[in-house]
Length: 155
Image (cartoon, rainbow, N blue to C red; front, side):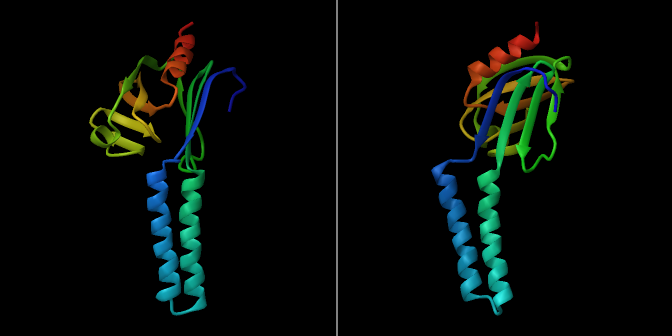
C-alpha cells in the first residue's frame, strides 16, 4: 500500500434485500439440517457453524475501489488478500457506461464475460477500464466521481 493521495474511494457491499433473503433461507436450511438430520452433537455444531460462516462471508464481502496518484487499486475482500493494481501508465482508456450484469457477465462478483472481466457488487453503472490490451469493468455507485478521479491521472 502506498501513501499517494487518494482521488477516489468507494467501498461497496452486498446489501440487496433479495440477496439476503436467499442467504438467510439457505442458512436456515443448514440449521434445520443440523437439528433434524445430524446424528451427533458434533454434526449439529458443524452444520450450525457452516450456516453462520456462510452468512458472515457475505456480510464482510466487499469491493474497495481507489484511484490514487499511481493508478487504480482494487480489492474484493476476502477473495483478494492483496490489492490488484493497474498502474496509471498502463491505462489506455476508460468510459463510464451502463451494463447488464446478468446478460453481460452472468451476475455479480468477480465475473468473466464476452468483453473481459468485471468486478461488481450491485447496480448497473460501471466504469470500463482498458489497459495492456485487456478490459475490466468496475461496478460503481459513483461513476461521475470515478471518471473525474481517472481524469486526474492524465495530468
